[in-house]
Image (cartoon, rainbow, N blue to C red; front, side, top):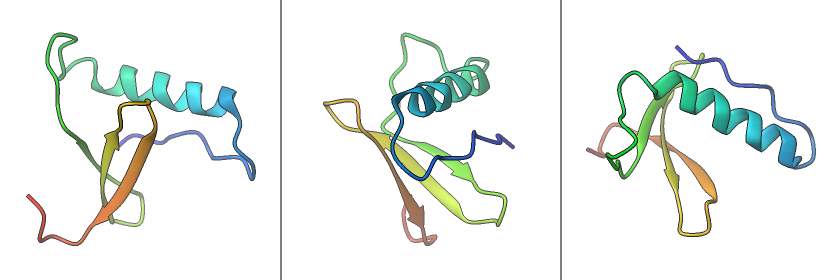
Length: 70
């Protein structure tokens, strides 16, 4: 399980950078830098499953998965 930094009430670039660093550290053992993945699947502490993606501008998005996606 990965516990990410608590988000601030307003967007802060420093927080976003910290989250990216945490994700890089957590996945460095299983994802190689020369491999691309369309999404990363994470489970939150409350048990929900999230798909994390990135768009061409580098914006991260998280979408709750209801079990029908594969």
